[in-house]
Image (tube, rainbow, N blue to C red; front, side, top):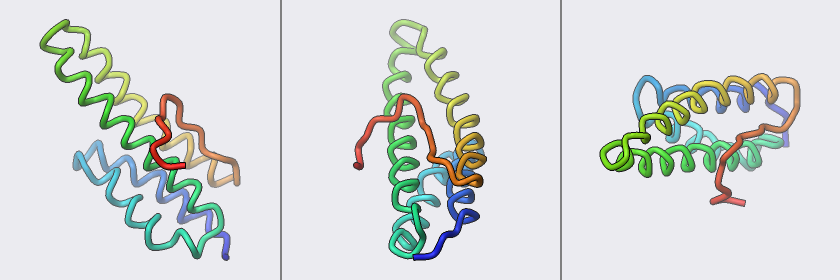
Length: 112
C-alpha cells in the first residue's frame, strides 16, 4: 500500500461539489474510494467516514424538508446541514493533509 495524502485530501474536498451540483459530493468520493481503497493507505477509513457523513446529511435534509412545512423550524436544520457540508470537508481535508483522522460530527455510522 502506498500513502497518498493528496488523494485523501481531494476526496474530502470533492464533497464541496454538493454545493455546486447537488449530488457530486457523494458520487465522486464514493467512486474514488471504491476504486483506490485497496491501494492507498488509510483511504478506506476516510472513504467510509465521508460516505457516512454524506448519507447522514442527506437523511437530515430529508427529515428537515417536511418540518419546514409542518413546524417551520426545518429551515434551521437545513441551514445547519448546509454549514456542516461547507465547513467539515475543508476542516477534514486540512486534517488529512497533516496525517490526522477526520472528524465528522452528527455522522451516523452506516458503514463500519
